[in-house]
Image 1: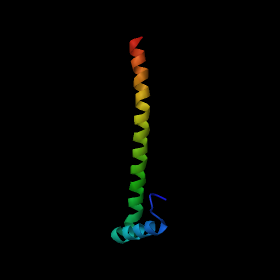
Image 2: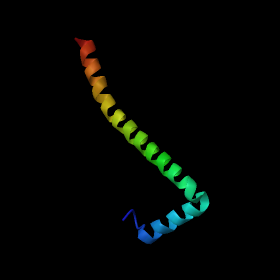
Image 3: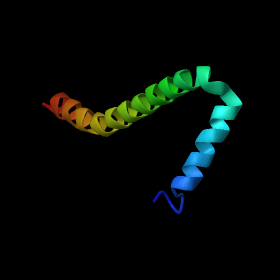
Length: 63
């Protein structure tokens, strides 16, 4: 699981983050992390779709 990271290690990381940032800031951090992941995935999809659009445009220019 995740390159040798087990449930105990994940719990330890969670508790360290909880101690560092406190319970009040944790939802804000999770929300920001989720937003960042969504934007990253969207950018990946856009990069994959972009070459296809370029091919279509170059084919239209040749006609």
